[in-house]
Length: 261
Ligand code: FES
Image (cartoon, rainbow, N blue to C red; front, side, top):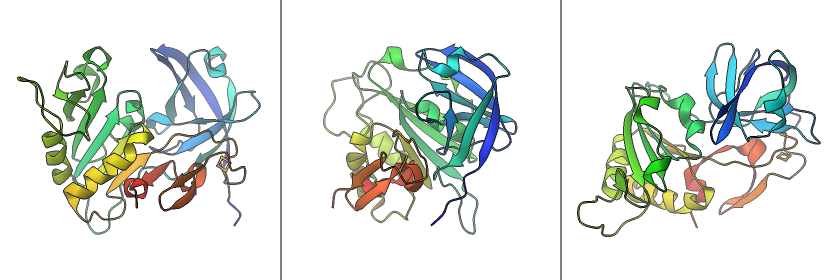
């Protein structure tokens, strides 16, 4: 099946440090939505995926690593891009408006969910970090967001991991009960975590929701994606239900497709 890929010329507006990464802002006609991506030509051997962390009518902002070629470009530089590409987060509902949305991220992947912070009238966010020093200041989040903090060492918020159970030291509360409460409350849940955790997180969702609808829980999967159209096989991964190509079947998948059969 042939795929029509949009070719665009974007204009770099700025590249600035946002430790530990950098942020680049590109203006263009059609920006990627949350979870989708563009393939940008920065002069390297292959195009590179850019995932939006902020989106507006004029363009989008993406994170890149320190030292990335985009960080060397001057404002006003034209950048050749393909896309938007891929399947992003799917929040459309049939017959009713989505009212409650839950977002769950580890702190490194949190920016990928930023475009969803106001995607429903009520949005709750669970952020997990190794320790308190990694947790962003609550002032960085919209006041409308219901924020739950989780740390793996219990130094702030609930004691992780999100999918864990068991006892906790005196004076510290495990995240499990809070996570289950929010999974029962929400109409959709979007994850951006280490993919190694997705089978356990899928099992947790299944345990709490019993028979969740398709796409009730969705998970972002990052990959190298040189072609973006399903022909090079670089992004092929094997899930319990079969092989997928992240570039065209994802990067956002039904979380339950990670559930061990
Ligand atoms: S990036 Fe080439 S098949 Fe996915």
